Image 1 (tube, rainbow, N blue to C red):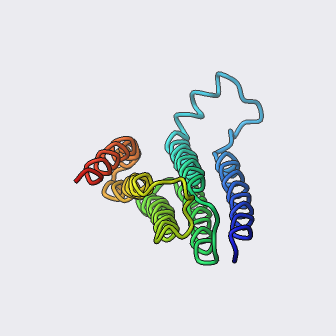
Image 2 (cartoon, rainbow, N blue to C red):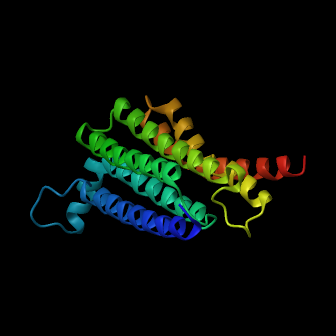
Length: 206
């Protein structure tokens, strides 16, 4: 595959990825519990939230995680000049885990947010991040798919910083038996992001 074909293939892959992410986020809103009454106003809002808040939080976590990975995907893609069969396969596997993540959310909502569903959701999110890292690691190996204007320093920093997403998901696994702690543990993402940024800078100048 020459450079021109590789660039076209990357563009098609990005289009497919954006469509899948868009559909997934739309589906997240679709699986949010619906009000039981035909008419829904401010009077019904309180009882609806008190009855469904655990499931609404599950859906909110799903939407935020998918949005974060979508932004991450666009950031990584902006550093690439093209793709090949191996890199495309890794990206498609990541999309498979994204769809698994959607299923894990529906599983959690249907089962009332059990520890099993929380473990399922965290694991699916971690696998999304791991495959994203593997895809970028492959792309940056020998600079095979990285744009010429992207320096080794930026490539290295990016490969460290993108560990924040899967590390956050793995961290949440420690709290799957405690609903509120599991929900709050997702807020550790900015902390992991900052730690990975600092680690990248430290290793850069070591």
